[in-house]
Amino acid sequence: MTRRIVLNGTETEIRAERLDGALDELGYASAIVATALNGTFIPRASRAETVLSDGDQLEVVAPLQGG
Image 1 (cartoon, helix red, strand yellow):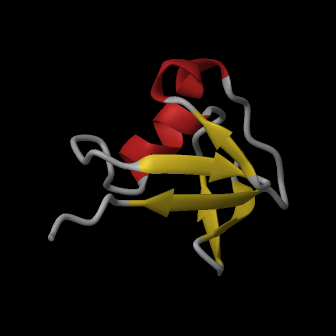
Image 2: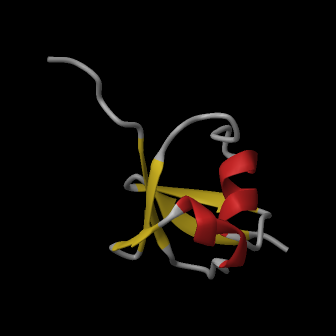
């Protein structure tokens, strides 16, 4: 079963049921990123328990470095 979510403003189809699986599927498995689901920050420790639904809006942001 696939889910339609909005990833960083772009509609995307994924097979994963949970946020950690979606990040793996989307190529963020080894990346250090911050995540927000429907406007709510999701800590790394909660990603395995966070279930995704059709229409969810997921933001994945990599921290910027610089000075």
